[in-house]
Length: 471
Image 1 (cartoon, rainbow, N blue to C red):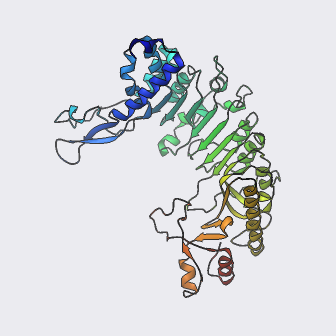
Image 2 (image 1 turned 30 degrees about the vertical axis):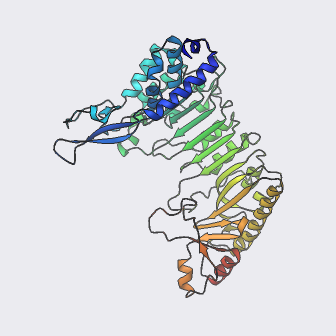
Image 3 (image 1 turned 45 degrees about the vertical axis):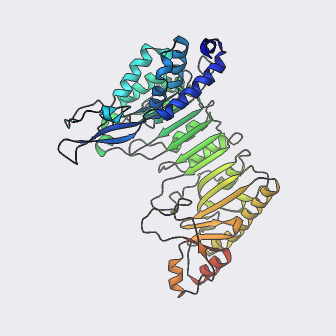
């Protein structure tokens, strides 16, 4: 093609360069190398792990950046679309190299101090000096920065990213950021781009960090009317923390302006159905994906028996989301109402975790709840058939503690070893191996759990009546 490539329209040129960069990614060295000091006195070269995606993008455009100014600008914008900024955690990353043999034959074992916040500080300096580079960032992820000072640096970085679409932040940013900081992140940029996806990741800190008075501060940005979540399409709250965790009141504050398409709450302990319902109500006309999987100590023991406190029926709240198609949720209880509306848009795999039946109490303790549960399974089957008639494939799984119910096939998946012993091998009369386990589709975790089998619902009811199996 020769010189003609420089005369191509920018859109076509961009497509060609992106294909070239993608091809380069497959051919360049994508591992980091380090030193293992445990095997011998001199140290041994070993592979440490894969390079981060943003580092691979940068390396894949090395040659492109040297052609001319136009290609250089394209390559920089391409490389900076996704940024992963992590705290250095002490693993000895001695060198990133394209060739393993370029590492010194006798690597030193001397301890070398490295500023754990080096990448964060350098990004602040770069984007402050060259704000045009920050405009190339579309998605940015921060990991390992939980202090007040690092929070200030994160907001310094974000204030220049006016084309940012997705951001993942430590949960402490919701405490240390001012109303101006958060209003700046959430408002629409000068080029018309607004943040659409926000992730907040919480972790447990060391006890000395969690009790540090300097960290015990909350600027309460969510109390301000300037902080508007109306542009967001997706929010994900994940993890649990021993330092100022995200709670129901935070979700209620977000719900004042939020109209979400996706809501995910996973691995949490401080968020109950009260906060869940607040966000679900505010987004009932837009919500398409809902996941609520609170942290559980063991398998599917339900961790949350808290009601909304306002007398609302949780099943009706879920069904009222007319556009909801993807659902994985943990509720204190369920009933027929959850599956009674034939106009819902549910599709694909829907997972429901529960501990009891609405108004009848726990399935472990209430005989009335156990009798009513069979009607819930029948209603779920009816809904699956209704969706099938509309050419929509729907598969519902209901998790009750260690049991997995599959209404479409009238099957129950469980560990039947105790029942077989109690019945001297006479129950169940029919069973087959199950690919499921106490953790759902992932099967077993290699701990003390037994392999799961599946039986019919009728076999389960008989075993329940005779005491061979329990909820």
